[in-house]
Amino acid sequence: MDMTSDVLGPDATLRRGYSITMNERGKIIRTIAVVRPKMKIRTRVSDGEFGSESL
Image (tube, rainbow, N blue to C red):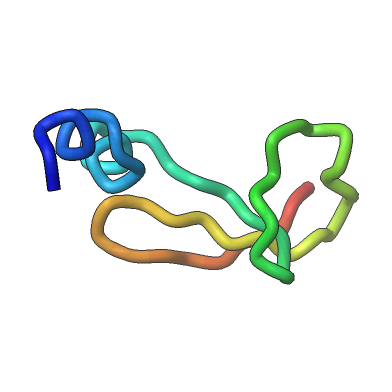
C-alpha cells in the first residue's frame, strides 16, 4: 500500500474520528433526505460498528 492510501484511505479517515453510516442493506447514507423516522442504521468507526435507530 502506498503512502497516499495510508493517509487518505477510508480506514485512515475513520482513525481521524470520522464515521460511515449505512442503512440496513449496507448502503452509505450521504444525505438526511434518505433517513426516515425509526429507521435502523449501522455506524462504522475505527474500532468497530454499532447499530442505532433514527429519531
